[in-house]
Image 1: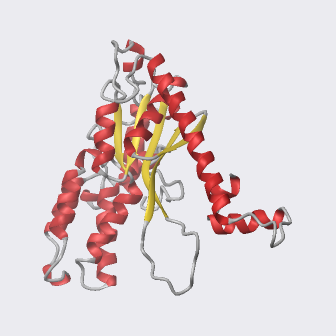
Image 2: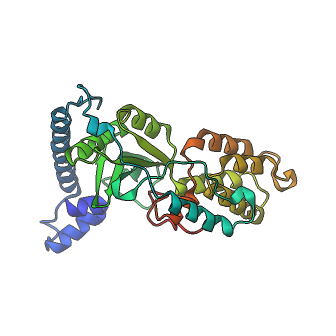
Image 3: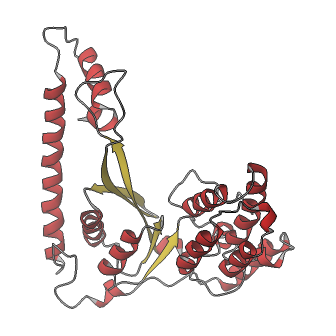
Length: 317
């Protein structure tokens, strides 16, 4: 099971036969190995599903929809106090803006919600696709691009982290809700969700956690990637694209959506292709406006801006 979960079936089987010293006549066959892994994985998933259902029912939640069946305990509906050190926030904003002479790149004191990290549960949810594995491989076969998709959720608090996975967004959200209830991670806590902007994630958050206060943040890594993609289809040449991108990201790093849209609308058209995606990028920013925080302030306060821990939080400071 370990080799099957961490390697492709072909590489895992090769390693397993080598470690077990299986000769040609006693070698474990691909189909036997694959069926064992998939059968065992299905059994584990069934056990997890049953435990999830029992947990939800114990806490008076519907096991199918995740909606409460009884009045929610007041403690579950109460989030933690938000970041209370206003003086520290003001000092952090002053420090950031001191190195940013351009007004559109400065952090505004707009009162964006900032969580207290020691009383927060950070939740990152994303769909992960892996290539479908064939029983036989030939070097000249045409790639079909067939993927198998599942949803992965990572939950992190000051005491540790836990990851769950499921087939489908809805089921994974049910696993997340059950885990939070089972481990008392809702009462007097703030929930902070990092998303890549997918509509299905927003929909499930709203439907399943409407009883509890939460914050949704557009993952900085995905925001930066989307801006780069749109500008690559819009700017004339890589050098000009990078120049526009760097300026745009500095504005967005401060959380200034209005200024970012204005900057894009006022770009010199000589720098852009006749058919460009600038309007689409502006619509994207407008659509996710309420989920774009002052990333610079969060980084200065030592808070996460992305579900990708490899992303440098201070790259634009």
